[in-house]
Length: 409
Ligand code: ADP
Ligand code: ASP
Ligand code: MG
Image (tube, rainbow, N blue to C red):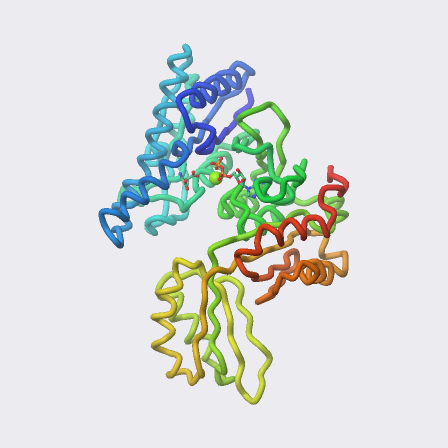
């Protein structure tokens, strides 16, 4: 008997009708001679609504309470799925993260999974239950509820698939798979048959929200292959797995955009050891995530240091940095929101030259100004005005001929 983990995202369980469809699919999979674990997200919009409510009652909600609140979204949806399966004559039981044996660290709202004890799940599976697990949550060693960061049900599914040694892990969502760009932004985006973990990791880490990047990181680390596919049809999806040699034939696999970014620059920072450390330790003390970091070449013993953060963190970062500009001897702090990051990703970049030139040329022709550039082995990121983001993604997609590239596999 095969053991399958199926994760259903918010839209896939967004209405009573859709929940019934999910229940039918779970039963169908079970009838196909499989043991089934379902991981369920909160119904579409529920997490956002809970967050909004929390901010209405408290300007800076307590993170412990936030986790208790947010975890209810997934718990409700998984109980509904289990009820729907049972109403169709099946045998299902729902478990919250703690009951499913998901142990995390103590970092509320973005906890990491430390360990999974799948004993209860395994017992229920051998009693022929469809086990429905509430995604996105776990508990600390002290029994406190934690959540795994936005999109965290993906992580629950991948981690559970790894822990119970599942034969397949399927991520059901509202698109047919992983596309060369968000199909809502680029209409002609191409669905991929397969993608290397590293590529999906870079895409997910730079704004392609089809998978939570921490989930992909986990999958790569523990070698959990998974398929992203639609819960609305039977089409084959995209298989995420270890890279194969033919994947290098494709120069660029995908384009992603990340909006709501802010750019911060410290001008004329004295070029001496410790300056960067002072800046970034101030920022990290407030748990602010920094992304693209660019330091200009030293000119008359000073450099300019720029970096990006999420726009929501800008006010706090400005406050922290204002206090140290003088101390480190910089001349001024310049910052603004309204920027976006555009990234092109592909392991083929390692063996093909001219990718950066082609990207800059296409943006230049589109009169899109580049504010910062950063590169990794398989990714080039540019920071641009947010208002240009969609157009830049469309132009880039076209410039790299993504629609017409041969599909891997
Ligand atoms: P779920 O609720 O199922 O977890 P998400 O909304 O988190 O679904 O992720 C699916 C969405 O990701 C799609 O509706 C799509 O708009 C968006 N998306 C962004 N980039 C991509 C991409 N490269 N390929 C596919 N979908 C993408
Ligand atoms: N409900 C959570 C979110 O909206 C987790 C998830 O859907 O994966 O982020
Ligand atoms: Mg998601």
